[in-house]
Image 1 (cartoon, rainbow, N blue to C red):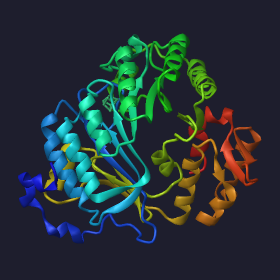
Image 2: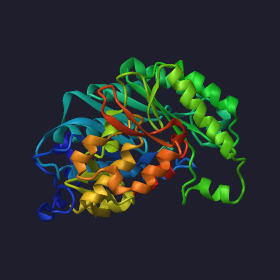
Image 3: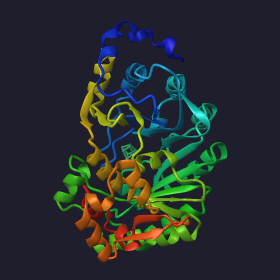
Image 4: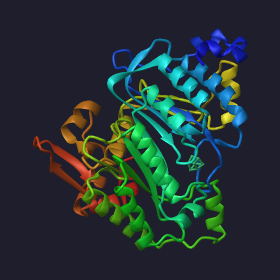
Length: 407
Ligand code: SF4
């Protein structure tokens, strides 16, 4: 179904928002090369998840698609981009027809360059061959599957609705259609043992995948897991076990050919996630959908995380924003340090100073010297002899506190 099929709410289109400058403008001299679209639907909300989504409210999918087409209209001309990323929620929770409409709405406003990366997040359950064919037919060339674990008990704890064998089968079916497959894995889950995590990693590297994201479980305020942890319901891994889990990922994945290129990301050569690298390089990008963030013309903004409010607002032709922040030159530089240090290649110090007008020493001399002296940061030349600042392997274990010191 194309945009012409949006008759349901066409009468509420309102030209007045077009004169509303807010946050959608970008510098024509430097067009952003990346697009994020948030698909806020899941079958069920997992207990640890604090993403923007509604579960079990599929009647909102059609109004959301219409609202999204209104927000996408903020991009009036069809622009070439290098990366598109559909995240969620679970984009593949949509029916094949809804997925096709979504991909068409995006394709009407953005053209992917011939060597571009088009990623879609998916879950193993419900990933039918029909949906895979719709994705591949629209040019999707990377799929990121929420596998999380190959241990049945850990999957139950995480409230995931697939089994280990179903996850492996979904990876195989996806890879047959879209060969660039990534999987997400989680460690630090209540009840998880070292041998369970080792088995998950071993099983992962035997799959036809090109990329792994390995995250430590977090307990975000407002989630069921946060409340359950406070009530003492969980048998949590100790800090030493957490450290061992991460260390094992940093040993097993590179040994199997998945080089670590970011704190949580491992890829076969040539398969780093180019879309995420846009974020870590502090480059600009478009964002659409409830809860989506964007960074355009030096302004960071985030849409309302309330999916119903976001839909209702756009059906009246009005943006629904949660936050808007104009970054000054120093804020931009500090943020670029924080993001750039996530990448194992680190930050090219000379290029950083040219781009932002500050050296990292000018920004945070104490944080730099302390962490260099403690062996948590290092300055090393790259293959061209250019000095780069990066986290050491030891520094990756405490990355959050190190990058926080530069803000
Ligand atoms: S499937 Fe993913 S996005 Fe959906 S509720 Fe679970 S963790 Fe969150």
